Length: 235
Image 1: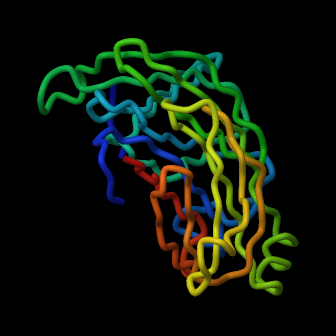
Image 2: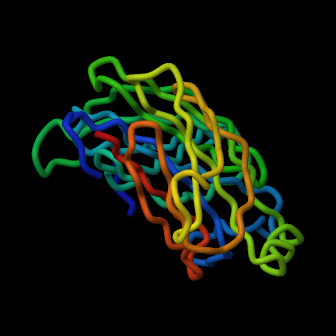
């Protein structure tokens, strides 16, 4: 393969994943739809706690050609950037490095076909035991230019919650403004394990996000990024 490129009693990490979009950023190419409607995106999130760095390989077979692209490793709780691909069906592989400093020797743990659709992020999550991983794919639509302009005019950002809390059947997630009390918190989402909540729009402000496990996180809305990905570790 070629390489291209807070505080509690229990110590077990239980991530809830917070995804928010604010403004377009050309570096990621993900704030809005691309001028070429024939492109989409692949993004990898490594949530296998006993996994080493995970490599994503994307293969494309043509009549007379074969294209293989292996992206840099993604370690536990980390998220890759968005990789741009033409709309098509690809073979993808997830693997870890079998031999130190030998990126050509990768131990594959997952392979399947993945369809990349126009103006959509194929959000690939690898979770649970790396010896028998669970791989989930979520389709996240990319905002078009009109929606981006409306969001900027309204000074709002977009947010989704992905529940990867294996210790519970469901998680309630609340938010409040930075200067409000817990009693003033509003329900943001109720999600079961592996479920991703619908997109919501919040006013740009400073927030505190609260889970039933009493993990509290202050979130200061960034104004210079289009994709803000934060694993929230609940102990």
